[in-house]
Length: 350
Image (cartoon, rainbow, N blue to C red; front, side, top):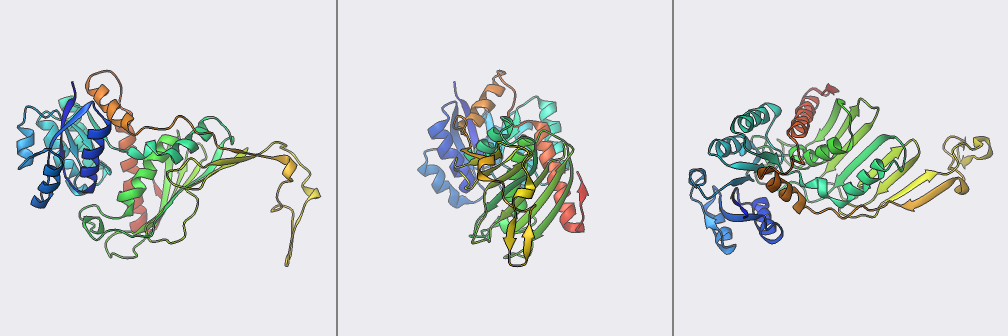
């Protein structure tokens, strides 16, 4: 029997969840939703779901087993805690909370109640990410030493709650949190330090773009670039290893390639690159015969539905969470350090 779910927050993301869960996840039945704005009721009615008049009506419903929290970020903690205290399992949109302290309060309630709580980190199922993860997991470029994860848009932040500091607006919360979660899932090592440059282009309170540099205990340096105001983007992924380089140009596509050396040691004195102002042997390209290039192998195509199927199986005692509490804590710990770095202009320990 399908788990019965109510959605709190019926903006764009709440509506997306409603439509996609109904169409793609038969293990969950969307019963109804609540939104603070009365005009959202029209969207609920159009989708044939119940309009809840208040969160308390959801808490008091014996029918609802799961609550999905999809509100502005500053409401996440309180709704998650209230839902679990009312006996509901919870899926929360990202960022899970405004900071680690808030998340720890939520997790304490999850531990106390024994209910299932997790964060909707859906970008772990992006195909471009899965291609890069597959390249690294199969050791196709040796040991990575620098990973670039970059995402560009040119529409800018919308002028709603995402433009306000109090409600958790800005690109660090909106998109960088996704790429930080991918980073934690990809690099199985302890993050040590972080340095962030954040720029306010359109709105005075929050960042439109940021560049994040994280160092790891295993020697990996990881750069995240998110820019919502850029008209010429860069490659989605650029990963340098000690035995090759991997590239995925586009977000949401599996168009990756790998170039690596098939002859490790060559006579560098045999080749130079000549420029108008001098020559260089160190920057000269390797001979073509010393290289091999191939399409990055695509793993089995990821299915976003796996997130919710896993959640249902965890509720039924059959699996462990894919998005684990310790991973969510680490993401928020890094986010906290990012904000300290922005405020102080310094490299911060994580």
